[in-house]
Length: 504
Ligand SMILES: [Fe+2]
Ligand SMILES: [Fe+2]
Image (cartoon, rainbow, N blue to C red; front, side):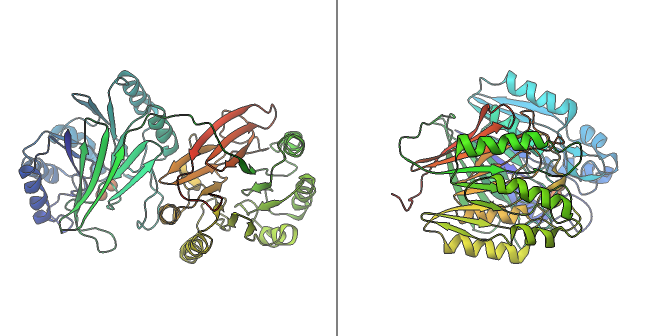
C-alpha cells in the first residue's frame, strides 16, 4: 500500500493569511502517521516574495517525508516562479515509486489567478502519460481544479483548457488528479478518474467557515483507492474507489426512450449558418432516427430578431413529434427573450410515464457566461426531489463539465453548486449545449452530455456539425454523436443504470 498526504494552499507569509499553528498541527500529524509521501498542490506562499520563500523552505523542512511541491497562482506572483525553482524545486516533474507514477505540472499564468496547461506543457504531459502508460497507478497533479467545485462563489477559474486536460487524463486512464486552489476539500469520480481537491492546510481563507484540512490518500495493491478529507477537527470524510478498466457494455434489456439532442443551430442569414446541413439533419431525424423527444439545448437563432425567429420556427416545425427547447445566450439578445416566448413559449416540464424532462434557464442577457442563480438552484433541487421516482433529465444551455477544444469563456458561473445539486440528487441525465463541441461523461452517478453545434460553422468540434442520439434502455444509457452531413456515428458514452428505476 502507498499512503500519501495531500496538502495544499499553505499561503506562507509573515502577514495574516498564514496560520502557523494549523500548519504545525498537520505537519506533526503527517510525521507521526505512516505516510510514504507528501504532495503539496501549490500556493505555498502568499505573494511569491523572497522573504516568503525563505520562510517556506524552512517550514517545509518540518515535514520529514519525501515531499513533492507544485507551484500555485500565488507562488507565481511577482515573478515568484523563478524563486520557486531556487527555494523549492522544479515546476514540473515526475516521481516514480513501485507501480506508481506521479506527474506534476505547473498550471500557473504569471499574475493571473486562472490556470492553463497549454502549449509545450500540454505536449509534455501527453508524452509523459504515454511513456508511463505501463504503470498500474497514474497520478497527475496541478494546482488548478478540473471540475467545478461547490461553495466557491464565482466558479470560473478552472484551467482555461480544462476540457482538453480532462479528455487527456481520461484517455490515458489516469487514476487520480490532485489539485488545490479553491480552498474547498472535495472528491468527485469522473468516469474512472478520481478528482481530489485538497482544502487549505494553513491559510486563513477557508470557505463557509470551514476549518483547515488535508487529504489522506491510500492506494492499495488490490486496486482500491481511498481518499479521506482530514480536517484539523475530528470531522473525517472518507470515500473508496476501485480502479476499473474502461469497458464497453451491450444493452441486454428493452429500449425505453430515444432522445435526439441538438444545439446551436444559430439560424440566421449569415454565411456561417449552414441551412442545408440543418435541413439534412432534420430529414435524418424524422426519417431515420424517429426519436420520442427532440431536445434543443439553446441558441436556435444567432441573434434575437424577428426575422431569424421566424425562419428558425419554420425549420423547427419541420421536426416531427415531441420537442422541447431552452433558450441560449444568443436567443435572448435584443428582444430575443420576448420573441422566444412568443414563438416557442416558456420552457415547461414534460412528464412522460417514467420520464421527467426538466428545463433550467441558464442564459443571461448580453453575455455568453451562464448562471442558474441561487433561486434557480433551489428550483432545480426541488424538481429533482419532486420527481425522484422517475428518470429525471435536466435540460439547460450552458455546459457544466469542461468541454475539450473550448476555452472556458462561457462557463457556468455557479457550475460548482449546480453540479453538486445534480450529483447529490442523482439526476439521471443532464443535457447541455454550449461550447461548440460534444462530450459525454459521468460524474458520480450522473451522465452529462453536451451537444456540439448542428449547423453553425464556428464550432470547435473536429467531427464537424453534429447532433446527439441518446437511447435509454432499462439497464443502460447509450449516447452517440451523429455527424450532421454524413450520418456517421461516434460513441460519447455508455453508462449502466445502477439505481432502482420505476420500470424495475
Ligand atoms: Fe490558494
Ligand atoms: Fe490558488
